[in-house]
Length: 88
Image (cartoon, rainbow, N blue to C red; front, side, top):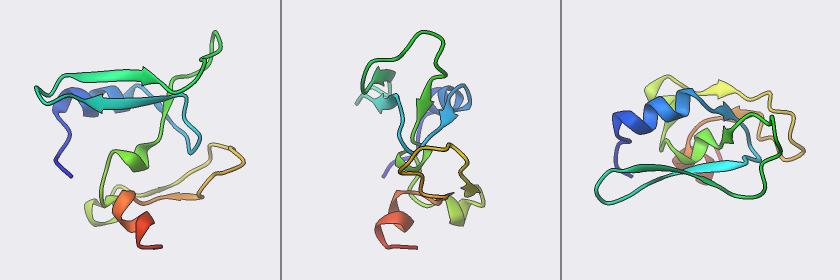
């Protein structure tokens, strides 16, 4: 997994963390960052993304955190894609 460009990190700071997100960030080969919807976004709803899909190992970086998104599928702790796939 390659590092996110600075513009993607900035976009993340504008979005709420959620285990059942409304949107996702996509980084093109030319490093253009796109915010795409995953389903209909109700008017006034906060833009939300799954932080865990963006970082491989948030624990190693010291940026893992407890999630309080309230989604029925909430993971409880955001640790990064690699650690989640390893069951940690």
